[in-house]
Length: 421
Image (cartoon, rainbow, N blue to C red; front, side):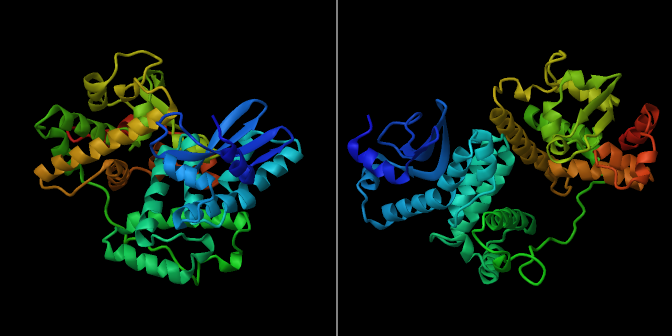
């Protein structure tokens, strides 16, 4: 039961108008009251209730201190942060939608995904939570890593307006000293840049104070490195006598990705038997479905090694089943995303054992796609075919006049990838 003090405290973070109510609550649905439990914004409209993360968790004793308006530094910082976000972001957006009679949770989610207060870590938490709601677990993980890195650099409360060119230069030097790769560094900084772009849209900062761009801070990039293998190296990997079934499975999944037009693991693991038509796999990249207006069908000839891998590691054929069994027990999109990441991590771990045993460079799932494109290019396969088989959109209007490659051409070109002709 909610106490009187909870009601009194909540009134400061409370909105009730036009059929929409907002309050702050400690979410006990999955934990016991004495444990650290997340504080969440509880929003109700038309008897539908939805919870939004604050990025803050409190145990019962701290929650009581919070309700009693404790002046201890940590509790006061939490209270101030929540009040600032409530006043400048949440209440503003909900009030606008409800008073206009246009409130829906979908519209609120869209507004909040582009709306941040001046608390950087809260902005990260909101972005991460929205991505999880949308099933974008991989992207949420990138943003969490970026946030963790910033917390490691400075443990103080940080405002978005404090992210200046000088601050970024200091953060960059910190990452260099920690031995962070340029690829990882770029991921951290691009995530941060997105939040600052959102802050401009929300008028938290002005364009003049924006620290990224020409003449300001430029996100460093690594010198291009060769991410592709030679066909002779792939032959060694394919013919390697794996010391365990798990290593063999991971090796075979990597080979499948390579031969299947460099398909990424997310698309590969979600392929269904209904995607197989006339001994070819037909699918659309999940990435382009979400981000591109041009939805391209990718066609993959099922060469003999691909069929052998399906026979060895695949499900029993059924139109509605995935070709591979890894997602069989996944009930939600979040479960599927999490399992895909697990398979990628497992494959990256064990494919490195294979290349180490063969005295080859370290590789990951990412190298399969680069190897596919590079080997075809070295065999003078038309660039237009490589682009089409990778699922890239047409670069010019002229390309629209050319028809797609036929099945025999696809077989001919992809057969160049076979190490045993």
